[in-house]
Amino acid sequence: MFSGFKRPECIYVMMLLLCQYLANGFLSSSGTTKRKMSSLIYSTTTPTPKYPTGRGETVDSRDIVASQRPPLLAIRLLHILFATELMASQSLYDLRLSSDFATLASQVSMCTLTRDEGGTVGWVNVAEIEFNNNTKTSSINDHLNDILPVEARKQVLRMNTKPGDVVMVESPRGFHLVQIADVMVDVRKMAQTRRRRRSLKEDGSSSVLQELWNKGREDSTETRTDLTYVMETMGCQMNQADSERMEGQMQSLGIIPLEVEEGKKNQQKQPNVVILNTCSIRDHAEQKVYSHLGPHAKRKRNGEDVTIVVAGCVAQQEGQQLLQKFPEIDLVMGPQYANRLSDLLEDVVIGGNQVLATDVTHIMEDVTKPRRNSQTCAWVNVIYGCNDRCTYCIVPTTRGVEQSRPVESIVEEVKDLIKDGYKEVTLLGQNIDAYGRDMVPKRKFSDLIRIIGSIEGLKRLRFVTSHPRYMSMGVVDAVAETPTACHAFHIPFQSGSNSILHKMGRGHDREKYLQIVDRIRQKVPEASITADVIVGFPGETEEDFQDTLDLMNTVIFDSVNTAAYSPRPHTPAATYPNQIESSVKKERLARINALNLKHAALRRARLLGLIVTILVEERNMKG
Image (tube, rainbow, N blue to C red):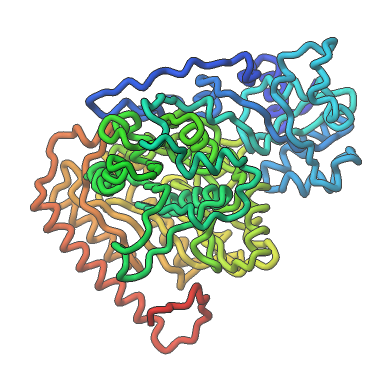
């Protein structure tokens, strides 16, 4: 088939085609993969995480999701048609370099039906894989036969893929490069439900949310001023972005945010829906959530009409434990369901159930627009989860393994933001330098910077958070060469001691970190460099701590987020001997904070007397 070809990309394509015929299909009809909903079984300890946390365990989201056999309904596809395998394999290699799939489709695809639409095929019902071509049911996707024939569709459906992957299949029309752009999963079938004893109010009338659903969700576009929600967000930028997506879901239902006037909090109307988007990165995170839940749970016990949702990392970490401690909670959902809140609420409102949604799933694209907290700057997720296993970190447990979004989806979101008047975009990822390494074919974050940075109308581009282990010099070069990219890098170093870095499982040493800093200073001399650091990690000696201070004195950071080590569930470091006394942590934290403030003042002083361009984000109405 590829006789005589020795180029790596041709060998890659040949292996891909071989895998195509050998792979066992995991996509199946929701009608044949009925999954018995297990009843909620409460435990007295934090449940074992659903994501792998040990080194050497599976970190491929395709395998993890496939093992769960999720109720997949459909996949959205794009394609490029070629006459020969050689042309298709060369274009697949071009995609690895940096080409945008939709752009490439408009340039080279032989399919006149989709070329001008960027190769768009549309949604394909996965039930087709179960049907025989001779049955009447084979017509389920027949409207696509002239674009992507049934032979090609079934080949794609039998592959173990994820959004963003590009695969090669053959049909009577020729050779197709097919991109999986998005998936549609029945999240209600993935959730566990428990029937409440009483789903109506004490007087037998329906709740206001039930009335909304009874009227039909097609009528929900009309805003109901009597239905309100409150969103309480804890933690990082990822949580802030997730909250914006959940708020978009609420407003699509016609439920508006409750505006609390300054100084009149106790006199305000209480919200109908309370959403806590939680963070588990620090110690006592669970207690903080319980504290926030208390007043809302009391309202419910007193017979008030309130729906309580706990989302985010503590929800994923604690799961059923939350329902045990607070039976007043209606919905517990992990961060992977942030853009499917309205679907999960349906079981709460209509069925009167408690709902637990923490199972693994492929990340789906948003079905509603997020409610942005700014009219100038916007968050854009590009990769979810983290495959690293830093010994102190709970993120892989709560946010799962890495799942990169397709370039085309990111580009489309940014273009929509520019049309809406946004000037600045921040690309988000727990480990943003890992972007694209989970895709087939693999992509590079440095290429994504150039692609997004070149979109017409964008004024400023930022990104967080980088990891020294994966950050390439190409990322620094991309920032230097992209006019819209802000000269700002956030690169956590966590410790200046190689011994502690090894115990942390960081995968890099101080020398690698300083090489990155040297490259930044060389290519972008005035760049801002910020970081994160942990003091008091188990076994940290005074010498180790001095190494950290020395690294800070070498770099002179613009700012450093400092924290004392705190043990987290399911992390190896929590069981390490030689845990540091709280008094020592506190003393070291005070010393490092003092140095941090000194360096921050020095870095800001360099701007005195300069004229610089600024971006006004919002007007301060208070001052």
